[in-house]
Image 1 (cartoon, rainbow, N blue to C red):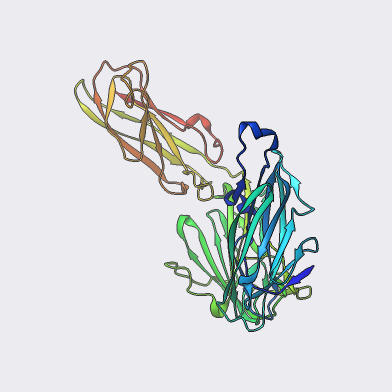
Image 2: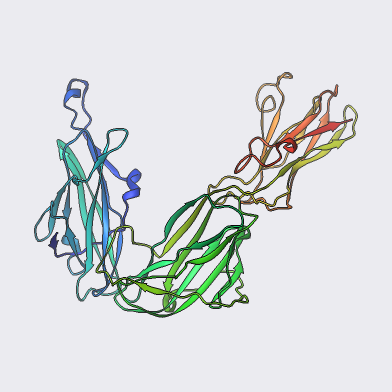
Length: 454
């Protein structure tokens, strides 16, 4: 690779191509046959360790559709005194600039767009102080396509630093399984880290093992927060892991997709503990330990950028049963009656929408024939004749999602409606589960219940 002395860092943004700036020429109908196409590029900001730390690799994402000679040019003058940038051998470089064609490893997607990733190795220069920043200017262009100048920022961080290496997806996990969740990191600073803090969040249904050097607390959405302190010196550039992983049990409450998050930080600079989470120790017969794996590295890859990681379990098929709760009321024509309808989770699985952002439960309520809703909960909304022109032949239904990310085992979700009895009373109403989340439950027969007025 050819090395260019300057400074400018950028956090890897290959996945941020959707936010990339697209440049191209708009062809008139007469010039349609000579449309020059388009090209876009994106480079994120990057933080590098001070001199003596492993270099960081930033990745510029370059895409093109129908363009000739797509390329990207770099202005490196903004990196002077901050960092050096090293480009692949297939780029042309000089003292303060570089030009790189579409990477030779680029591949087309299903739409014919050519996508490539350009690695740039960034290293702090000697004397660059903590907090020093530089910029790298870049322009994606092609023959006949004018580029749009953009910038990414490179920041120097002095002192110990750590990067989490875990980004793992697991399929086929079942309740009762004992898992060995990996915990792995690289010491990425210019100085050793003396001790390490590991902070983990286990969602409801995933149960962490007890370790002597860990503390445990209850987080939001029935999660468990774990904070561990592991002693020992972590050498810059060296990789460390927990031998055998962090023992984790898939409990009976686990259902659907689950994500355990973890973050690593030098203990001296880790900052405050999780807010509003009292932490206590558990009885344990072992400690969480780290061991070095391999020799220290001099350059970190583009995927190694952040102090946080994840362990993602897909589609745990836990047992659960959500029951629809109907209602009965007594009233005559002209009366207004109150009914409460809802759902109850008989467990043991806990629907959890905290990853998807979806509600953990919802119901659809259809009032009995001959009644009209006069008061409804704020979280519910109608469909049918009450929101449009009245049509006696169209039943009115109300959609009510449960607020909050989870539906705990044993929890009941109720919503109240005031109904005016206009008569004549006819078919009963109903409450039903419109669709199961995260799947149809184990007893669909109780997913509908009647609502009657007599």
